[in-house]
Image (cartoon, rainbow, N blue to C red; front, side, top):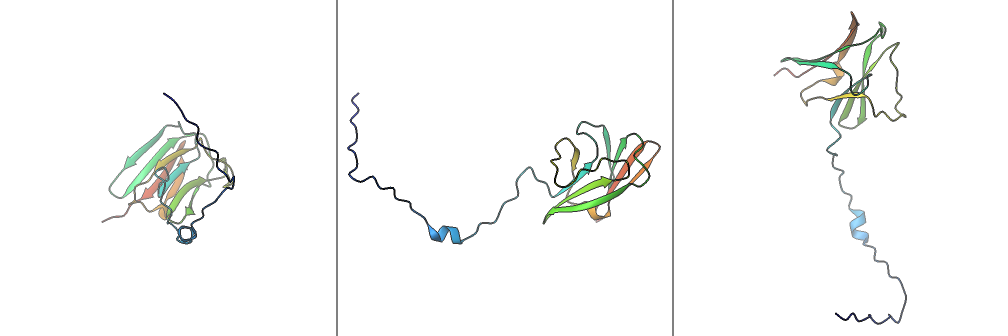
Length: 137
């Protein structure tokens, strides 16, 4: 098989084509499949043993842990419009700031029927109990 070289172009100009009409119309961003609308994040490593119990009106998460203090509370953070994260805060809980990368944290994808704003947490007898209510239809 013979390969014939192409003739060298007489000009060596580089032409850039720029489509102005396509840049003026903005596209809507799609939600990535790995980002969920509602997530519960517990202050444990991702391989922690957490019991999940679902009832008709709530989801209940129970984790056996060391003394984490009496002042336990839930904070609902809206990361992006439509994307909500529930974090557990307290006196003896390691608090990760929003600036730090949180990779090895226990997370649970919450169903769309949950109400993260009404989530509650408590600690008693060595158990951290987090309750997330659901819509009652």
